[in-house]
Length: 468
Image 1: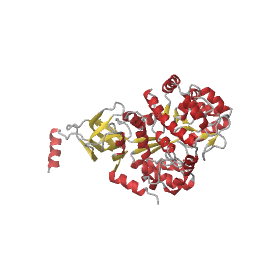
Image 2 (image 1 turned 180 degrees about the vertical axis):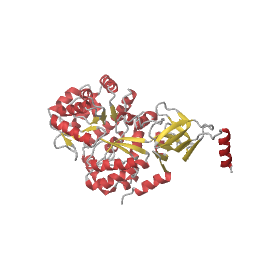
Image 3 (image 1 turned 30 degrees about the vertical axis):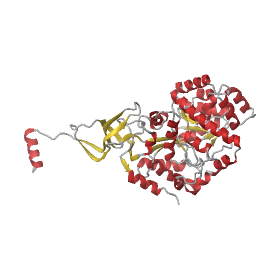
Image 4 (image 1 turned 135 degrees about the horizontal axis):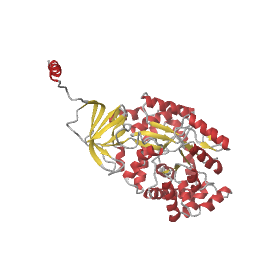
């Protein structure tokens, strides 16, 4: 009767009902954390087709319809976490175990990972496609594909280069995959071919990151065009007043990588470091500190991990790969153990110095097979915790996850911060991470596109990830 009356009035007098916007999901009344400014405001987020359409304070005059609403009162909303250094690897026998990691990332609010090279590229690309289609639960995956290294490379699946033709062929392979960036490794590649690979990749407009052979200087690496340095060993080398002399010793094979560490740490000079920090900042070179795994590996000789709660998610095959690093730590001399712990403490200070100098940091866990007791998902939170423990603010630590990760991979049009037009990957926390970084673990809900994963479903993911 009412609809008929309205229709008659519409025909007779031209009246009409107000147009109502339609959304797939509304997150109402949440404490929205702006990772650019650190400000928090109570606003509603309107989502359709997996993207943020509006963010605004509650407005009763704005009429809309929605398929789903999340009452985010008292919750803290920020972009889904990015782990900017992970690995999927270990050969065919560990494909299933690696796939299981996907659940652990989502269960910990990690909606995006940057794979830093491995030997499971075919499987990884399949998972990446299935996740994009929504047929598999997991984080967005950006991958380097196989690493580039020299002949007889340490890691299985690496693309081995010995000359310029090899370099071009390797880059062709990566572009055919297609990989999202180029990862270089330093186990066998010559310093000359390392620099040529970076230059060739930059010529093609490719993003580059990696380890750095100690037979080249950090200045040479930055000048070649590297976009990110994985781990702090190489930055430390560029902060040493004695870098050139130590490099010459390495070239002449008078010392090796680990023998160079005490020499470089001893010759650390503030003036040299400041020049290096300025150069990294001016060339927009990101640095991945990987502090958490450094702490874990430095204290393998002291810490008993047999009761770690995340061991039950790893499976026997993954746990077996941990043994190499464990044996190395247990069999090391007293001096080597002490040197490793000193280096760990030094790296914490170096990470803070880099951040104080406004060098961009990327939060990455280095989790995956072979990296003992560094567990996918939860280790990203431990990395943020280590950053803050070393004097980096919670806000800057959070920026090192999603915002910097998206910027480094040139994905900032879609990811990084909560703003209109971005893909709606976000987390709702029960407590404020700016007050205590440990609150990043207080995950209430994960939203990935239009998919809502509440606490019950997150717990279910963890339960189904347990390995017998």
